[in-house]
Image 1 (tube, rainbow, N blue to C red):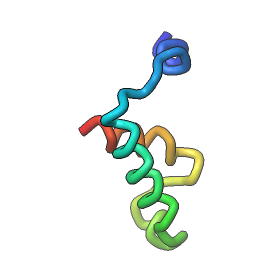
Image 2 (cartoon, rainbow, N blue to C red; image 1 turned 180 degrees about the horizontal axis):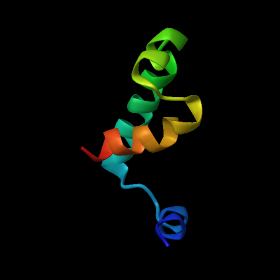
Image 3 (cartoon, rainbow, N blue to C red; image 1 turned 30 degrees about the horizontal axis):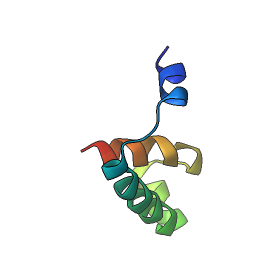
Image 4 (cartoon, rainbow, N blue to C red; image 1 turned 135 degrees about the vertical axis):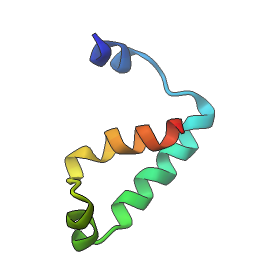
Amino acid sequence: MEFLTELLSRPRPNEQARYRAALAILNAMSNSDRADIGIKPADFPRIAREMAER
């Protein structure tokens, strides 16, 4: 149910800029940095969304 809600809802305008910034930070990380904290590129949208909500 949460997936469907997420799929149909639009991001809030003030969170969209923070989401893009968080995604840019995650993409700028090196492979060794990603391995140290244990995240994979497939997790980037979820992690960026969580970072934008804070």
